[in-house]
Length: 305
Image (cartoon, rainbow, N blue to C red; front, side, top):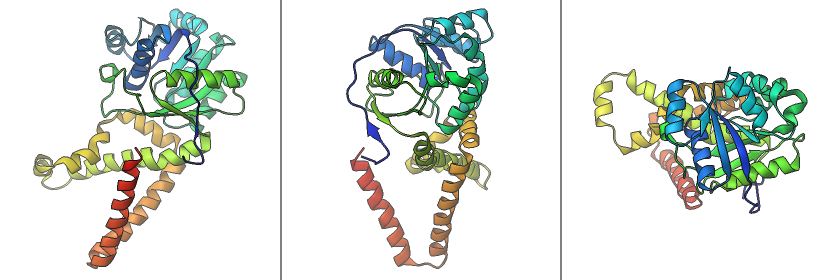
């Protein structure tokens, strides 16, 4: 196991009476479906970006009731919540936490599903102040190229990894509750520091999305683009699948983990430039060496998944 990742032991299944879900899309919706299926949560209140999203979430069983974020009912839902899950784009963290803070009871746990951690912590701390102790950060490593409530799956997290990223102000019991909540979805739960999270996922999650978006736009803007798309096969489809993911979400990820992403992108471009030079000089031996190294690494990594 990676030296930065610490697996949690099997934990007792928690009981959550009231859960407030802010963002009833793929990730948040899949979480509540899984928790309902496991008998962990009794009642889910959802907040969504539109009436259409909320209606869909209610019909699909993602939530039991719904409220508007600017309503008096939202304030009541905060005050009654045992757990609040932030499942909206990370760029909205500060604004949402500012709305939550005045109505938050002392024993409520806040958690999130965001793909960046340091920026979420900073924004939440700015809004919550001393109540940051109640915020246990987390990130499920699962998803689909689809988004919205209709994309949610009760088994999305089954055998997938979830990173719980505690900070020094968290209460140990709150950390355990969030780790146990994720275990109840069938996920493999690990502890990972905020800094290690952002550095690691810049390379293996954020950079691949940037490259997929870039490749799609490159082909779309190139000559014979219609013919290229018509003739593209499985390789192109696999590489660009994640380019269909939520543009708003990935814009926020790039803005909120900018330095780590740029570091990885620059390193990648250096590898790409070296490969370009190898191809340009028709260096068969060097090309084979680079391709063989990548192939062996990919095959070895695949065996561990």
